[in-house]
Image 1 (cartoon, rainbow, N blue to C red):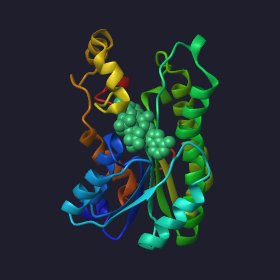
Image 2 (image 1 turned 60 degrees about the vertical axis):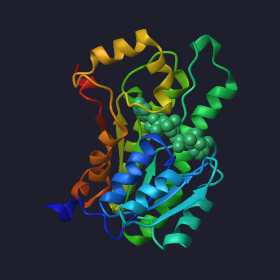
Image 3 (image 1 turned 180 degrees about the vertical axis):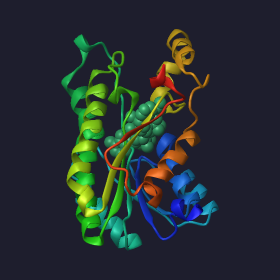
Image 4 (image 1 turned 90 degrees about the vertical axis):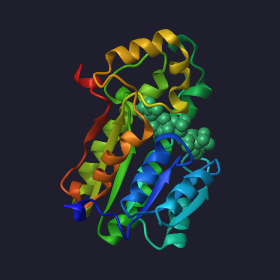
Length: 251
Ligand code: NAP
C-alpha cells in the first residue's frame, strides 16, 4: 500500500513554501520521498532545514509571482537544478480585505495576478514539460471561497472561484497527457493569511463555532491530502477540488 503514496525519485515544485500551508505541503511531500524546489520571494531557510532533516534534496528559486513573467524561467531553472519536474504545487497567494465599495484597482490586480494569473502560466510552463515526460501532477491551492462568497474579500473570492474552474478546465485538456490537475480547498488554517480573522474575537469565535472538528486547521493537517494528490494513489482522479476543512462545508 505504501508504494501507492511513495514519492521517491520525484521532484516537486512548491510556490510560497517558506511559510504556512506551502511549507507544510513541501515537508509532507519530502517525508513521502520527494525532492523539493521551493519558489518564492522570501528566503525559505526554515523549510530547507526541515526538508534536509528528512533526507531530501532542496533548492530555492527566488521569484516574485505577482505576474506571469517568471513562469518559463522558473520551470527552466527547476529542470536545470534537479533534472526533472513531476509535481507542481500552486500554493502562493494573497488576500486583501475591504468592503466591495472600497476595493482599489491596485488591490484587485494584485490578488488576481498572484492567485490566478501566475498559477495559470506556471501550470502552462510545467505542463509543457510534463506532457513530454509522459505525465505529472498539478495541485492548485483553492479555498472555501471556491464554493462560498466570503466576507469583504471579493477579489480573493473571484480568484479562488476561478481557480476551481481552471482546475476543471485544465484537467479536461491535460488528463489525456497523463497530467492530473486537481485542487485542495483548505478550510480555516492558522497561518499569516488568516491572522486578521484570528485577531478579531467575534469573527474568530463565529468561525470556530461552525467547524464540526471543533478546531482551526494546523498546516500539517493538509499534508496527507497533498501527498494523495501528488502520488500514484490519485492517478485516476482529475479535476476535483478537495476540501480539507474540518467539516465546514458539510455543515
Ligand atoms: P501565508 O502564510 O500568507 O503564505 C502565502 C505564501 O504565498 C507565502 O509564502 C508568500 O510569500 C507567498 N506569496 C505571496 N505573494 C507572493 C508573490 N508575489 N511572489 C511569491 N510568493 C508570494 O498564507 P497561507 O495560508 O499559507 O496561504 C497559502 C495558500 O493557501 C494561499 O493560496 C491561500 O490563499 C490559501 N488558503 C489559505 C487558507 C488559510 O486558512 N490559511 C485557507 C484557504 C486557502 P511571502 O512570505 O514572501 O509573503
